[in-house]
Length: 292
Image (cartoon, rainbow, N blue to C red; front, top):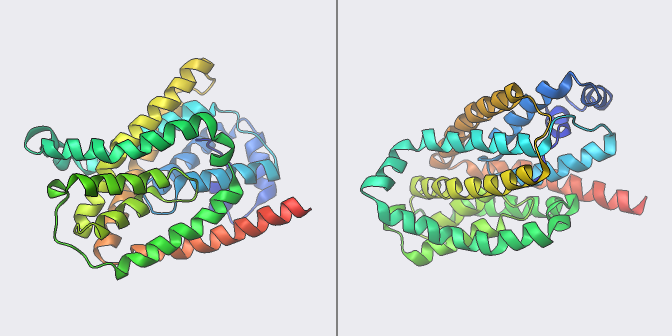
């Protein structure tokens, strides 16, 4: 996954493109870019809006408006994923302790749910990089995420807990996670919806989704760390990486709380009203760029 500086600047500073270009070009932007990136990573990793889709679209914005980050992208990516992983470990520490003591059956369910992502994800990382970095595909898939979220209120909430799930249900949720490897498809949105459709309570669907994310995020971090080791050490100061970990951790905790509360109150579908217009705008932009 490629990380960029421009999207959070454009989102939070109201499209001050000229200022953003100057900031990115300036070395003093290094720490600021890592911190802003940490905020975006912490939010989009857990909110059902597709972090990969926003990253891909942001990369296209960076190419469009110029400027290159001077921090080591792979190093920053690994660090920020560590921060969001810590968020899950803290937020769900009781469930994780239960997994390691009295609820080891769920560990098997999580491994089963991870199989589809492994089968799909490794070949895509090796052979499908252009596909995974396509802003047009991200634009097309974001409305798909929005439509999936809009179906969530129409699904009847079940009474099952994730630790009582059948193996087939875990595999089905894993298939939803595998589809979310495509940019623009939200991992949390797909897996939570699949969990509710499988008869889980909303709370259980969210818990299983984010416990499953521990394996996914850790596995993705290992692959990225392998790239970092292969490419050699980068130039990002350790203090910048530590700051990024801390900020992505805090923002990730807040995002987890937000998602769980909105799911319990039946408002998770509201994120569709972000995904759909952003996707449509991206499609129009990319098609117009190809025509021009």
